[in-house]
Image (cartoon, rainbow, N blue to C red; front, side):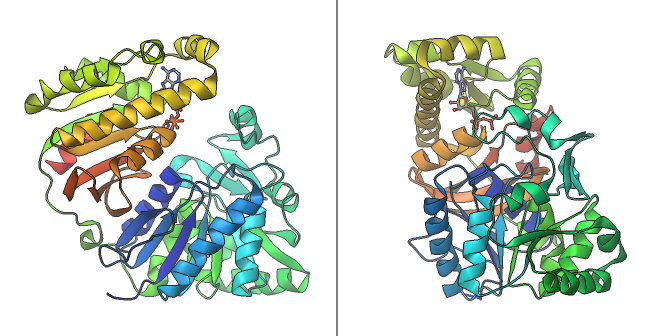
Length: 422
Ligand code: ADP
């Protein structure tokens, strides 16, 4: 099999898909793996994205997993490595972005890298080291209230410095806007000033393309999926439909949604308004051992021949709060994830071969239940969400899956996704 060019390590699952999607758009054939692969690659790839679940685990574990991933990618002959994290820079003062980046640098023996979560297509921009989400600073975007990684400081130089041994500096927008030569000169100056990691400003895709070109010789880059826009060209690849080609879609269609994000709620309402078949599952009935999964599968089996079916736990904030009050938020989350994963697996057993999953954690649970280890990345449905093709436990010949992080996708996402495969 041909040599893999770019080796990527992502700190969560839907983030990995988002990165893979950007690379495919740039002309790379991409395989995403769930954890460090135990088996050889199932198909030829220019880039491999290893999806870890290392965003909020203890830093020492995140480092160990990331280094294992790096060693595997090195064994595939990768020429450049990419550490991918969230475009809202989700981390705690203890990490894990800084500690993992530095461990990768130490292992590769490099003394400089960049960090930028900028993803203009999704409204994430970085200026003077400050991260904006849409038109507000990170710490006013809602991220200041995140349950696991509250982001209370929008100044990423300061945020990353708190996590790093090396000095953190700024590759400012005025430099980035001037292009590769200016970026190269600034890199030299930053290194001379003792900077090991530079937050790179980027406000547009053009900025990211300029950065990508200027970072061609860096063994390690770190950032959000936006930074990936400029990397395929460094390997002589151009955007092409061939990179995103997947096998022909067949079989029944279904959606499983455990996301309670606003975008998902709108998508659910749109699907139902267009006459789509949808069934809600009730976490309180699950908690009292009612046969919710079996009922949902029987309901779906009777309808699959007529078109896509949707099974969801998606609910309004007040309803979720009430359930959490009874079951605890972690308890409710795990219970619902487990049930939806069993439903996804049962649907595939019933012949579903085109499956959309809404929700980051829900996607992780479904992928695990389906026994998916590798995904070939196909065409983009909406920014950050591609169709993928993967072998699964009840679908050895493979199925098409789209794994949608909660807040991604237009209101007609569910309908649009299936139309794309038709
Ligand atoms: P998103 O990407 O929108 O954040 P996730 O799947 O990552 O979606 O997270 C949603 C979490 O909420 C999951 O743990 C899921 O099990 C849980 N959940 C979903 N529906 C309900 C509900 N009705 N009541 C309580 N928790 C729920």
